[in-house]
Length: 99
Image 1 (cartoon, helix red, strand yellow):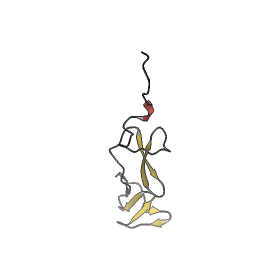
Image 2: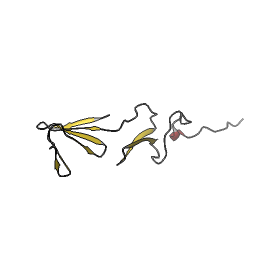
Image 3: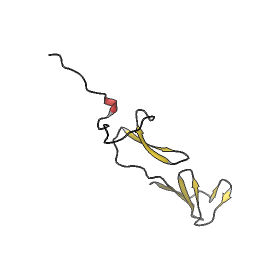
Image 4: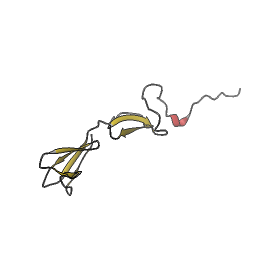
């Protein structure tokens, strides 16, 4: 989960003003008013941390659904441990040696 703090931000979102300690959602971020010192926001999604390097994390907006997809083709899911133990960008090694 990632968080960030903006000391210059105002406690305002979509025209509404927030008081110290109040929270609001900005997409997949939950933000908290820390007036007068700024605004802190944290992701509400839990990103996977242990997956093959040929997979990437995709966060769908506005549902905040997290999925692993192939880096080479984000339309395809990446399912570690289910036949995806070899980097797909290397192709299959189905060559026969002439003998």
